[in-house]
View (cartoon, rainbow, N blue to C red):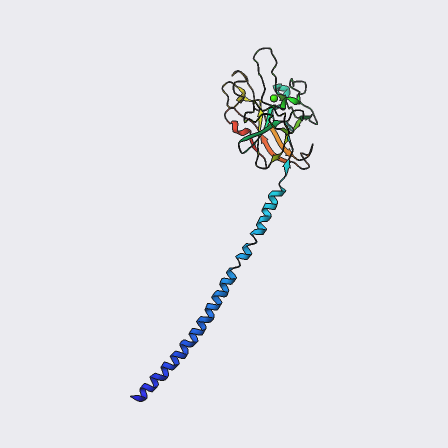
Length: 258
Ligand SMILES: [Ca+2]
């Protein structure tokens, strides 16, 4: 009996030793765990978000554009000798930021270049590039009185800067574009008012009512670019795409600067 107890006592001591080992092993585990936690502090690697901040640097590098060019070449409309159409008829180029009108074609800034193979020149009764400057001012008549206020682009191009409104307004039929030059930023919106079906009495937007409903006012295509330097379309410019208005989709005029 006592001999048996002695064996049990020996087993108990072994168990204590064993649990002591486990304890020390557990301690090691705990230490390792803490160490791992420290490693988790690798979020300091997340501090590489600072590297992401490089994205902020990218944003800072985003171009600040100074010019808009609207190009009718290559002419995307039908043969003008059949339609007597001198390509897109441009009334206004307007710049919006956050829904606020920043300006329109700057007075005195319009620069017209004819297409390399001019088309529709003799059919074009609206060859004054300055009609792209300033506020929406087209007038269309059903009588013998000539229309006024827009520029027939044909397959050439016209470059303008944006001029601030002398008096703050969000109305393109009021803003004069006679103020200081306005930069064009990524994310801004350019609205090109090409004389199309939206100019009818039943049209939409500020141009509604300018032309009689009998006016055919065909919507025509044009390419839009923004660029940093004078004439820099292909050097430091960004193509914003090809656009065309319509009687039912006025928003197609809203062009995002990228
Ligand atoms: Ca005009």
